[in-house]
Image 1 (cartoon, rainbow, N blue to C red):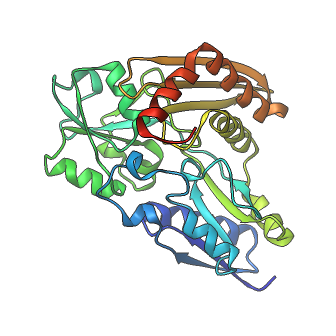
Image 2: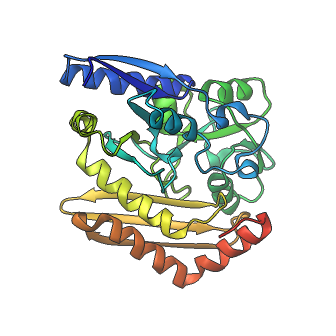
Length: 313
């Protein structure tokens, strides 16, 4: 293996932070290599004036990085795990799941309000169907408006009074040093996180044993198991559309607790449940919980969404 390792990432400040964080950890553990960051613009970074649900989200923030790796232009790709599709291209694997940050969402409101304190008719900015469905379920009097861009862009639009508040992932706000802007850490009872939220993953070529051995040094077992359960849950449920699905897995002793939910777009309908299983069967736990939700009516909710969006299931 040559002495320079090329680490691919998206161009955003948060993505660059994550790639540098991975490179620093690898450098500390394997200092014999030099680590160079290569930023690559993805489709999701180019299209900012269209809601994610309208352009599809499979590989939107990862495909260009994966193509670069398959061409040998980069040695690894650093992703937010919530952006990574559950089915990877042939020849690529997740070589490491780094220790997960708190996976929940936060409210950012210029006046410091919590969700319950926002006035009726307040405009909430989010680009996520998952967040909007759960907010509508919690408070139908609030208005949802599309808000895309990086963390700094979203907060700047708030300061320009284009929105009354915004919902973002705690991990991104925290990593950008903007904790002081958080007005509420939203409980999972109100908004269940996205699958993989808060976790950084490192994708590598499946046949590159040396690279696999390198990134294994920063793999965090409990985080990997939790993410595997969530991704198996999502894979069992998802089709060709972006759909409002939330999940959260956590290792507790030798067991894992997985909670998941499926929502209608307006939040009116919801199927939510949790299961506990052995950590050695993380993926099986995800599949079983998905099957439980499908038996309880999640299939009908998802079918209506896909039919309305004219997506293949």
